[in-house]
Length: 466
Image 1: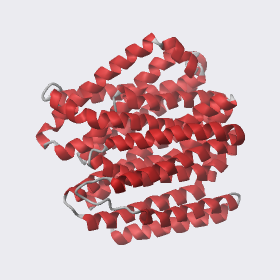
Image 2: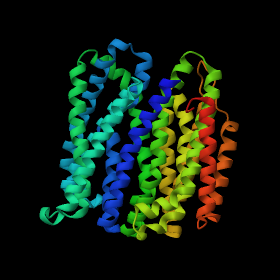
Image 3: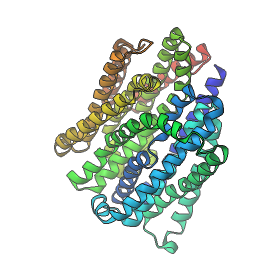
Image 4: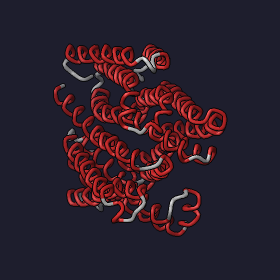
């Protein structure tokens, strides 16, 4: 239990360091960049997130399953082998991009130089995620935390240099922002490649390992791409349908701000999945049920607390030009909460290597998001984009629940709809209260304090995070 707590702390710290740095830089750049410039940076990051899934074939998605089914002595060779696969595919993507650079530049409204930089940044992001997942399943998340700290510190230094020497350098502010986030990840990619290939031989068992990896990771590529489309299409469609980079900037800031919850979810899930896999493998279903309830309550409390204190932090982090997006917060928080809820079914599907359903569900949800955005954005603008995202994640949650129930495995899916309904009701009520108390600072913070005290007392009583 103590080791689980420690791993959870390191996983959360890794995410908080990276996203905390992002918020520090947002404080700088929302005052240094116009909303239009910030919109361009957001579009760059949206495409980068999309290609981070593709350039590495999402091979890191197979690591958790591989560590269940492949012997400990083979792990370094497996990691080296699938990393070679990722590098080869990245080279193919670069060649294709150079051939079609002009049409891509015209569509994305990014310069050819920024497109190549974006692809390299994407591979750096993939490399960090690869190393992070490796350390998660080795129960060595302290190394991920160290990597996150180095990347974040580098971003801050580069941003500071750029801001203070912008006139001398003669580079546009949004380009400085892009360089400050890209360079550290490029260095990270070099480090990860060296360490992975040093510890393992990529050619030992290459055919065996690629045969194991590809059926898992290829559906996860579609899942990952669809997930990025689901999370980023709203920004691109606001740009295309409303033709206003300023609105893109406002919407992107709110999504980025709320994204800290998604980062905490990622950190908690990284801690939870190895525990869940271990309990499932050893048929400890009572412990799964008990700890899953604590896990769900933990994230519910974090979402509610975040919701009620967020307006004041937005006023700290951003210029008043961005404050108009505050009404989006409950909708985006709800979308993150449904992302968290559908992970229970996805973890079950991943354990049994049924990744095709993960790909189908996320692809369908991404398509529904595009359709809903096309309908709602012209009528309701930013609120329409947020509602479209929320509805898409709700549908995704329902889809995965139904898939998990119908899967034929040697265990029964432990999470009925009743496990989630009460918690969904609580966060819906909290979201409604937010709109009534948006201008009542004391009332909102009092609710947040009550939720925080309840959470701390629960953790103290159980002596474990979840």
